[in-house]
Length: 608
Image (cartoon, rainbow, N blue to C red; front, side, top):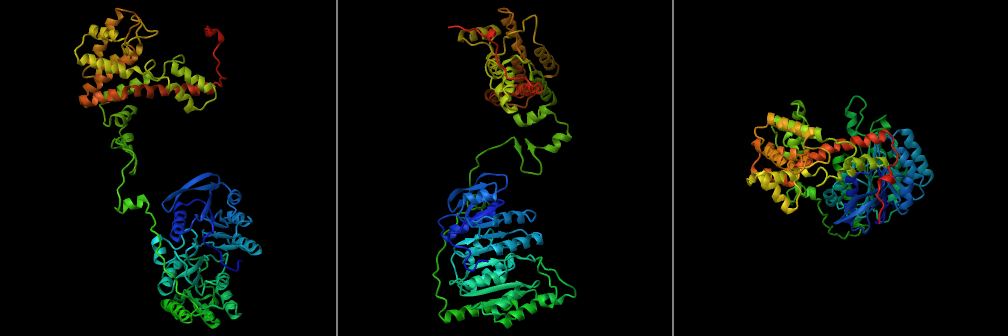
């Protein structure tokens, strides 16, 4: 066990099992104390590596994350404190791994319920190697103005109130972490404050004892008096009694053992800590208080008188000239986190993203205001979901059916079209699904699948301006623009695209109006008079019929229709549909275990 000071203003720790709030509180305390370097040198998260972003005052810093205790200790040889926030299941193993590192001097174990046999092994190893274990079941410890462990002393407001940002003259040790906060406050009211405070933890076998720390405090010149808060159960306080009797402590000790109320109960009482259970008269709070009093400690008659006893002891030391006045300092203002400031109404901050189509903040996600449960319970289909997410409204059933038909008809067009070919080549190169899919999608454009929007734009403009099919086609010819939606590499006037016929049949049966489709048919009639392959293709059919859907449903204004066409909604339909087929081609090639594709020489014209 160490015989003097454990921490200083340059102490750095390794934090095991990342917890954002305790680490940030440590860093805020660092800033409050005027430390030049953060007290957390590294984080250990088993199986993870990288960095965690946190704040050191106003500055955002990146703290390294290591996957093992050994790697962290090697990377940060000056970090000699190990703060273990792992669960009781793994706390012993990780703590032992830390104790075995030559760079680690102090291990703090936060978890409650660590198996007693494991704790005994940790204690034995630490004592034989002159190392310190604080805990298990501890909140940690603090050296005022220098270093603190995890959540010790609570919030920054409490730390400032207790004047823990600068050192005082009192060494404090307790079993209870919660009561430590109370005593920090009490001590700050009636003395010049804490120099160092430790909560040894409430388990039956603490890694270090009350007397261990009192003997340390006795060797620290800056500590002028000690305050001890024990509790009923166990016999730890008696080691302090023996130290006092043997004259090992030559500074005033003010002590109180809580739990005197236990005698009011007829049966044995278990208090909050595992060790807070009286097993006989010797372990009662009354017996311990009397033993401490007899050994020379200042022990009040009740907890209510504890504060007065601390005050009187401190004032006596001041009168004797043993405690010089502490120079008060004004701690810096800790920058407030943005989220906290927003909640308290101190600041307002603009958002970075606007979303109007979905909301996942409630009990269940909503699409355009429609809860997920309603979508399932009312039997919505893919077309209905598209209408909510793309158009922000529930379209009539014939509209969503048409959308679903378009998806089905455009899902695939064989392995030879450019998109499928690219996907197949990529999949055969051993690439993953997303890479293969994207490879195919990137071919979609003006020459492949991307003509739906253009067809809709040109057909709408021509029809709305009252141009005849002849005037429209000839004006496009003069501009040197091919009519989008017209023409096919394979289909002819006497061999129409079956997909176009199916779409037209559905629309004539269910749509209130098909004026744009009929106009497209008039254009096709004229273009077929010029060449037999200038048929209305599936892009032209979908483009013109979508105009009829938008105009005929009565649910869209003219401005909304123009915006939908301009943004590229209709090409989105082809992208969505064709993704199904491209994914299928990827799976097909991988299932068939096809080798890397190499284009045959005989299919290439080599020329100068």
